[in-house]
Image (cartoon, rainbow, N blue to C red; front, side, top):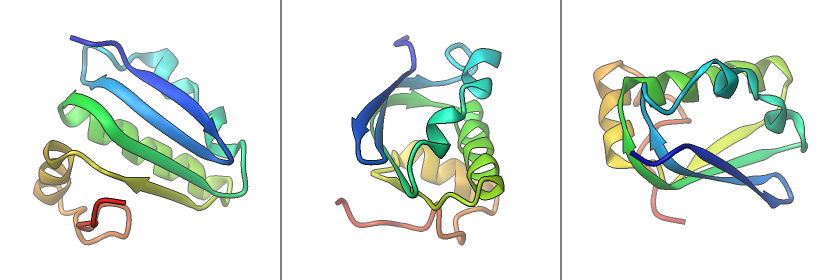
Length: 104
């Protein structure tokens, strides 16, 4: 298990590393949404995520909800296949956030 890290890469870009699981996502993680309003547009690179479960998907949905509330455009890139599969099982794969993406 690797702890969750959110790293500010500058210019509204953030990279997420570690595990997005029930064991690594706590109340403090969910409450620490301020990074989503730190720029006019936010891009979250998930290529550093090594393991995930439904808690990871729930966290992403919370980020989407928060960004929408702040009217901040949010884009995910390099979403791990595990998360895309969970999104598909949940019927979220047809949203712009989870639709299949080329590596960028």
